Length: 113
Image: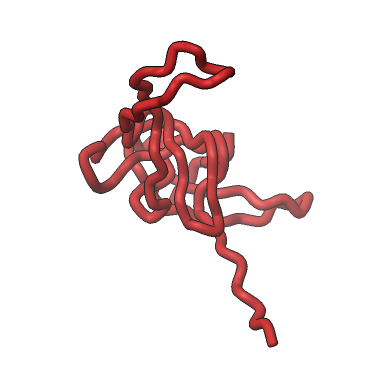
């Protein structure tokens, strides 16, 4: 029998502005451009940049050393509030029309752009 696995939920979404809280890139504020919910990892622009040695292929005739972003754990980032100026915790608020909005716990401003 297969067990029903709980669906992983990541607290950030694509195009969210986040602040990295741990590691070599601590304090960096950037945008999320890919989310991997099964792994609980995200790709953040210009964070955790690694170099990779690429062999020449049909698509890339030159080959050589390329740089790209590697995945980081989603628990290492917080949503960034422009009004507060740093990463913050948030709460969800249900609007009159039934949509959900993420609200900053400190200043009360909306974190959905």
